[in-house]
Length: 300
Ligand code: GDP
Image 1 (tube, protein in one colour):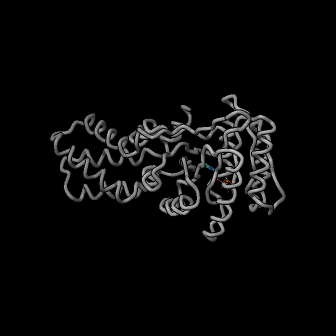
Image 2: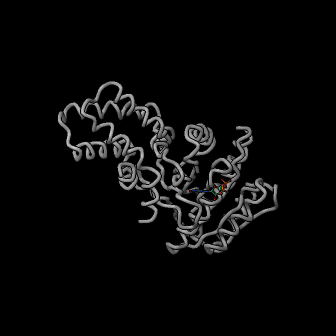
Image 3: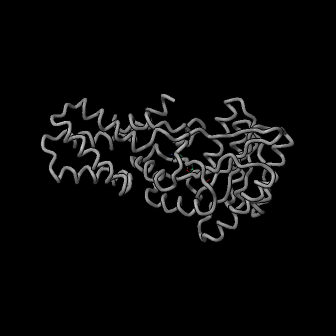
């Protein structure tokens, strides 16, 4: 976890540092406030949250009068924390009830890191002592099932797969059935994320969801978003939220971008918390999202 924090800090601290140095200027004139706004927008915080934050900062700086660096840091930390939100329940819930495993569906556009995230999440669960079945319901991307199975073998989870191009809902159903029979704790279902038509996506994901829910309650629907895609990620989020009830967001590739502000923007957009972040391609590169650690990484 320490390593993850360090990596997060490396990619993120330009935003906080930039803000701090701007706020430290002797004269906070309109140009400076505009620069502060630009810094936030560039980091993908989003228009409305940016305006709100700038307003709050203006007010508090005015009240403060003379500013010591320490006071400014504390002030900025508090305001960024408030923006990121400390009240969300960010735990990934997987509850086994009787012989029915907890079910987690992982959705998102192809290339965002869905399969990788499913594999990493399986690893976390197995490390916590849970038994896991993986459902390779992304039957459209040619290598997706192989990729997931490789993850399964690596982390010690059994993978249920169907024929390539087969029906995703039937794979999801089989995975749940298998999970029940095996008596495992959790079934993770990787889904296909072709966004070429919204109705296609709706039909497909909606069907997977319905089929699964006939046999077991869905504990979580995690939406995987690539942090590097910025505002595009928001558009994707909106489309998916129309199709399924998203319960949590996984923000991937936060290791390679300084655009961590997307955490704020996407939570606003969907009203659900970022629960996990991806900080690399390796099996240990998935971390719970912790607002304090995140904001500390921002400010450096
Ligand atoms: P899917 O199509 O959504 O299932 O995407 P994949 O899981 O195949 O991931 C697409 C690419 O992104 C792969 O090369 C992954 O290794 C990479 N990837 C996934 N998550 C992360 C992450 O958190 N950080 C980085 N740097 N790369 C990631």
